[in-house]
Length: 121
Image (cartoon, rainbow, N blue to C red; front, top):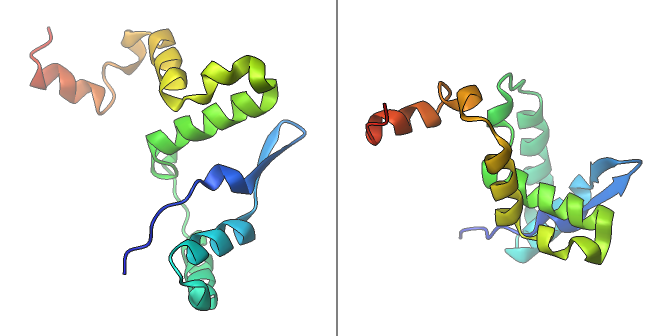
C-alpha cells in the first residue's frame, strides 16, 4: 500500500522567527492518512536510525518544491492576508529566480546541464 503525502506545514509553527516542526504530529497525521498508525513504533525507529546519518550537502536535505512550499507558508504566516498572493509557492519561486543573477548559478547543476541541452553559448 502506497502512503500519500500530506501538507507538512500544518505541523509547523513560528516561534521567535524560527520554524518549529512538530515531528510527532506529522508522523501521526502521515500514518493516519494511510491507515498505518499501528506501524508508528516501526516508523519512528527507522526515523531515528536515518536521522543519525549526517548529510553534508544541503541540497539533499529538502526537495526544491518543499522549500518553496515552506517559504510560501512562512511568508503568509508572517504577513497574513496582506501577503495572500505570496501564499502560492510558484510566486515565491518566480521571485527568487528572477532575483538570482545568472553568473552565480550558471556553473552549478542543474543549470550547467541546461546550457548543453539547449546549446546556450
